[in-house]
Image (cartoon, rainbow, N blue to C red; front, side, top):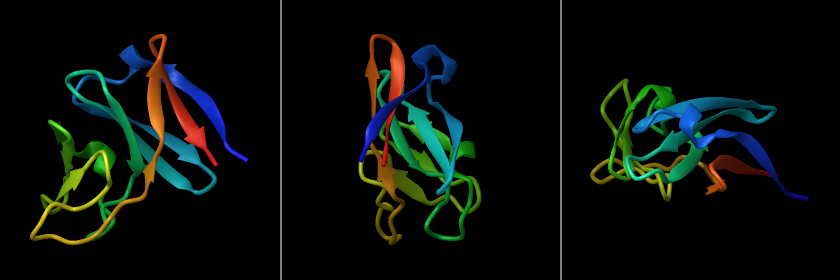
Length: 103
């Protein structure tokens, strides 16, 4: 069963920033782009487990703060030539609130 959970107001996540959500399965990073879209990924880079929530958001990508890997926010895929993938989670904005789909 899956449910949409209200995380916070969109304004609680800085533009081009993130917020960490603790779950039983590990930390999630919820990112906000410059045009107010939100994306949620596991908070671990596929390279060496760096905290993506501390990375820099640019466009639809986040840069891992440890070794500079670029990760696509919409898919969780590393940008070539790097290889790997971070698990993505559904997130959306509704009436100014950020909602996460929790499985």
